[in-house]
Image (cartoon, rainbow, N blue to C red; front, side):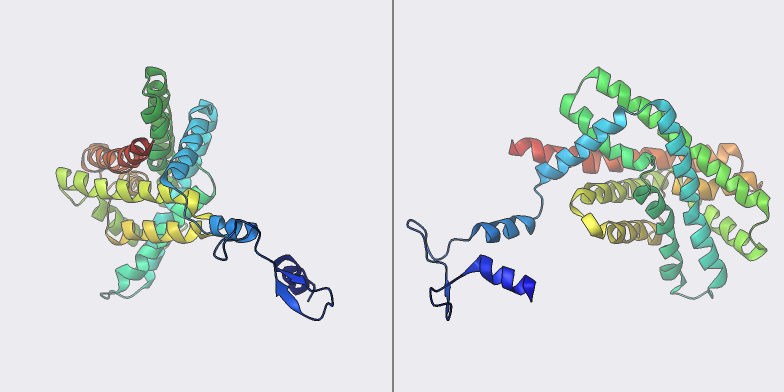
Length: 298
């Protein structure tokens, strides 16, 4: 009741007799259609962020990432590579325990989001996120020093992610923590990741990079809906079986450590085409065009 009383006190004025509530009189120069300051504030809170605001939020985050020391990037990148292995575990366990039906992929690929949720909400360094965040400072300044920092970060984070993914795959293969049916599911998932021709993998990876970078672009305006956005966007990548350079690395590296695929196969059939496509999708289709729309508004 106290809250209701306070609200009424803010929006209405009592008559001298305190027996009748009357609306606040309209001030000179105002119209009946004009909003109060409280209503204007409420309207601003419900207005979607402009593209320029989102751009600045991501650019500022990218600037912070470019200033991080190499040691911090390495530890965070290895942690992200390990965490992305959880996508393999979740999808593998679901695949092993569900019957082989037409709807199984719809459920199995819900597990694909687990690694992304862990990495993004845990603020760990993931290579495909960096294709958007740190490229915006470069597109803004366009100088050699920023380019050098971007390349340094990309190389360090990618290498650290792959190390983490390898450690996870080796642990899964050597630990004996999973039963034979689950290990067989891991093997099947890995084989799917290397089943496409080189250029088909490149084009499919472009879509994956585009979706992940679009997800990152949506984050500043997401607030409490961030987990839902991560799940929806990464589920789309998983259900379409689009290759992601780090999530897929854990899957394919399992084949390498278990002896089902050579290192040459890992690089030639998976890493190189997927890396090219993810970077092209993240930089060209999201960072460049979203940056361009903000620049042309200025």
